[in-house]
Structure formats: C-alpha cells, structure tokens
Image (cartoon, rainbow, N blue to C red; front, side, top):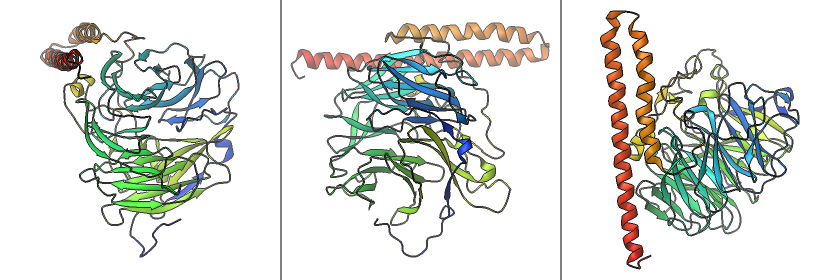
Length: 493
C-alpha cells in the first residue's frame, strides 16, 4: 500500500478506532442476496435496518428495527412486492419510515414502513414509478428537496421523480453512452456527478439536462468506478488503474484536467464503495469481498487525502450500511457506524474518537443535516436551491414533528405520470383539510383568533406559491418537449 506517512499531522480524527459489537448484538440468520450488482445491499437510518435478501420467484428485502438483535426467524415478514430481484434500496432522508427500492423488473417502488417494523409481508407499495425500459440499479434521494428521487437504469437513462405525485419530472436519456455506474448529488442538490462505463466523470445539471463538466478516463481500469460529491464541491472517485490496482482520486470541479490527489491501495478486484461523512469530511471505503474498511480525512492541505487507519476482520463483507449522523451515539463519541453484511448475519461496527470527558464533544459533532427538508419538490423544480437545514446533536437527536410528513403517504399508488391533476388536487385539498382544524381551535379563546387567521392565510399563500411553481415547471417542460418535437420533425434526431 502506498500511503504517505511523513511528519505526524495534527487531526482530531487521527486516533479514530473501529470496533465490532459483541456477537449477541448482531443480527443472525439473514440470507443476504447473492445478486452480482455492485451495491451495498443494505440501508440504515435511525429507526430501521433494511437488507436485500434472497427470495425465490421475485425480489425482497428485510426491514427490522435498528434495536433488533439476535436471530431473525425465517418466517419473518419482508417487503416482497417486486417481480424480480431488488438491486438497490435507499431510505428517504426526510422521512425515516419511507424507503425506495429499485429492481430488475424495471420499476421503482416506495414503501411506508410502520413504526416498530413489519407485522405481515408487505406487497403493496404506496407509489410505483415506471419509466425505465431495463433493470433499475441506482437510487439517489435529493439531499434537501422533499420527495425528489433520482433513478438510473441499465437503459443508460436517468429519471428524476416527484414521488409525492408519482410524476416523472425530468428524463436524462442522452447524457451517457453506456452503463451508469454511480450517481451522487452535491450538497444543495443543484447538480449531480456520475461515472459511466466509458470511464468518464460528468457533472450534470438535471433540471436543464446539461452536462456542465466532463473528464475522460478518470481511472484507466475497466472495472466499475464510484463517485461522490464532497461538501466543498470537490469530487472523490474510486476505480482501478491500468494494472488493476485499486485507486482513490480527488478532483476539483473547477479544473478536471488533473486530479488533486491519487492514492493506490492494492490489487484486490472488489469494487470500492465510498461512504462520505460531510460533518467530519471523512471518507470510508468498503470493498465488496474485502475484510477491511479503510478511512481517510479530506483537507485543504496537501496531499489533501490523508489515510487514517483501517478496520480489519477475518470475514469478508458482502455489503455495508452506513448510519446517518442522526443515529450515532454521541455519548460514546461515536462518529460513524457501519452495518457489515456477512453471508448470514449483520454485524454493527462503531467508529469512535477516544475522549476522557463524558461531556458533549462539540468539535466532533458540528450541526448536521436534519430530517426536515429545506425545499418542497415544486420549489426545487421551479429552480430554487437551498443547503440542508441543520440541527444540533447536543443531548442526542429527536426528530421534530414535520409539517410535510404526510405529503407522500396521502397519495397511495400513483402509477400515472399525469402530474397536473395530482398536483392541483393536492394543493386544493390540503387547505380544506386544514380549515376545520383551525376553526375548531379558534373556539378555545377569542384572543387567539387573529393569530389563527394569520396562520391559515400564510398556509394558503404557501399553497398558491407551490402551485405557481408547478405551473412554471410544467410550462418549461412543455417548451422543452416542443423543441424536441421540432427537432424530430426537422430530421435532426
């Protein structure tokens, strides 16, 4: 391994150590999927662990509460509504009960998991998204806009959905000439980075269907690559050299002519899956089939990517789930937690910074992204961007009641792509539901009446604003489709 080790660099994460939990705290008898697709096979949030499992005659994944430990009974209920193997699963960053699944059956489905987990097999999705012609293998939720989901399939097409209405908002069909390996949003969700089988790194504006930057041959090797946006706008990629050595590279999006840093690790053939923590600026690399998890810190000082340490065990991992910062144990100075998938079990691994004090360590836990979205879907579609809303982890984290929480759940199983009626119905329906609730509460005291009326007025104005955003977005789409139609009629396509 060619990690640079020179003068000892000062960093609070230099002594981060990884430790597996005791065997009795793991989850046993989980039949992890044998699908050959290069995915993590696991998704974790502060409430649940979801694992793609082997299923005869279709696709299924297991969902259990994060507090679950011990053996999983073979008769335990699963989410089993797909007609073919599930390839990827991702929890919504803004609702810990909503999970999306992508499958070889060419569909993406959204599921609402009840608090406490499943009590019976779940076969009916609340939303089914149909827009791909081949299997769908990549899911990426928008980091700050509510109900925006990006999907990528083996048809080399990327789709952006408003899952609250079931609408296909944008379809990017001509950006990639070959199989898409990886898709990642930037911090405020204004752009995405992708890597493709043609070895190119692309930075794309999905709303304009425009490729902003391209770097050919990010890695010379032919095996799959991965790319993630860092919080400062740089991009980190993993791949293989011409000699099949696994590589990690850091790129400045202002100038993609040369990488800022390149590190070569070993000659193993497992694809390196990067997991990025924007709060600590640390990157964890888990290779499928590896027995190790490497972790690095990215800084502004050369050589920019600093190797910290690695966790090593006897058994190789089939995949891994990365817990969001809202779920870690701040009282134990835990800065990250993985759920490592073995052949038949799930093993938690904690990354901890050793500290003597029992007080909250504010330098280890800057304010982190909350579960509250910064934007509504319609606002993002209309062109707005916003950074994540932040929340303090001091004293642990408890999700506040969200004013958006039921937006998706109130619209069951929308297969239609005609969004106009859905959007209008939703926007006109919600104030009607709110009005009686406000009127009842007004009888509690006349002094509260003006305030309640102001609240109702503000809600109606917000609904009107959202409707305007939808109308603007639809007119932009109509204009785009008309231009494409003209090109087709002129023989340009």
